[in-house]
Image (cartoon, rainbow, N blue to C red; front, side):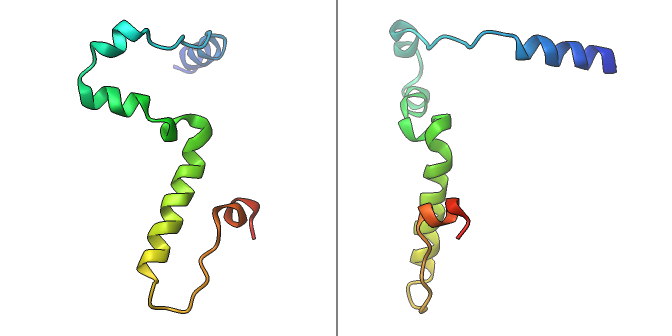
Length: 80
């Protein structure tokens, strides 16, 4: 199995990136899937920031009656 897995990993690393879907293909998608696909906050570059912001806002709304300072997403990402 190991040679097969190694071959698969190597072939997947050398594979070109998939081009974006055409407008005609996206129009044929169900509306819910199209909305999810079109969301900018779910792109790989924005996903971490979106998750940190959601977690921060959730924790601040849960701790609204305590005297706790909620860290900003920038301070969390910086490790402060």
